[in-house]
Amino acid sequence: MNGSGIDYHAVDYHAVFDALPGAAALLAPDLVYLDANEAFLSMSGRTREQVIGRYLFDVFPDNPTDPAATGMRNLRASLERVAATGERDTMALQRYDVEYPDRPGVWQERYWSPVNVPVLAADGTVALLLHRVEEVTELIRAREAGDCNSSDRSDSGRRGRDHARVLESELYTRARELQEVNERLRRAHAHEREVALHLQEAMLPAPLPLGHHQAAVRYRPAAGALNVCGDWYDLVDLPGRTAVAVGDVVGHGLRAAGVMGQLRSALSAASRVAEDPARALEGLDLYARSIGGADSTTAVLVFIDWDGGTLTYSSAGHPPPALCQADGTVTFLDGATDPPLGARPEPAGRPQARTAFTEGSTLVLYSDGLIERRGEDIDTGLRRLARAVARHRAADPGALADALLTDLAPPAGITDDTALVVLRL
Image 1 (cartoon, rainbow, N blue to C red):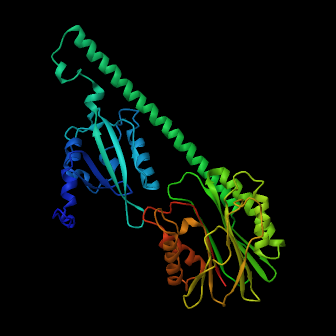
Image 2 (cartoon, rainbow, N blue to C red; image 1 turned 90 degrees about the horizontal axis):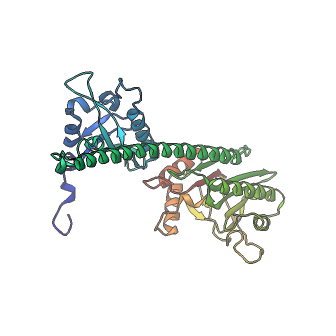
């Protein structure tokens, strides 16, 4: 109850939906009608029994006598796009003829302005599709130049009506052209995303086996994003030790992915020859200064000494790895943090730190998309990560990685690309 004395928990939202002046219907993601308000039923000339529980295009198929009909195809593409992306879609004006309910085989030419909106579940997935539509048939027909001029039979009245018909027909034509352009842009963006994801997958292969040690890696693009970003992970297995790294290039798209590929390869090579992670990052810093778009990249590198039971690490402005002991105690490796790559006027020696681990512990490296939320302090995200790691610590690395992505994703989905590495020590 708020200050005005209204108990919002007592609001009958079904009654509100039914009373909406605009026509609206709720559909399941498989396009089956779940509900429709009175305005929708009245406008479509259908009863509730003829609509609810039925597939959308069984109720409203395309006009079979019109070979140029595209309304069903366009509406299906819009609704499927909303279900897949979780983003609303405002369609251009559509011609979608409707069969008279009491005159089978007789179709009425109708024009519509639809908007399709996702209704999200608590986990950020699309639970329902809200289909709102306004009929604009009379506007498009332009049989009269407005009600006020309906009785005007003069030459000027006829000219006005003719001019209205031309303008409104032009509006419909331009709207259809706009929809075709938008559809071409969507296909181009989808193709670019597919190319970028293939490039990302090629540069981020599954790790090689680490002897009897278990490891899992995950990469998740941001929800609804058309482009990948520059997050990466790497594991290098050497005699007696393993080097594991996660990094994040600033920016989006193919350019960021290309920079990521260069830096990942350079750090992977440096990890094979450097004596410690600090020197490997120093070499990467020097290399990054010659790569356009590499400034402000963050990275963290950990050397695992299996025989000595120690972790030696160094960070270039990256969120600290989490180390979870078998008893659930979580500590963050934050004792050797330095600015991101290229952030200093001149490259200098980077710090590193060392900590011990016990067999059965779990090491988690990640990029900031896993923990950061807009308007939230990073410490809140770190505490949330620590609780989740401790809660799922008994799971194998693959299951633990999936659980972290599920538990830590906000309701609207991950808003930044995320790279994740989980190792059982």
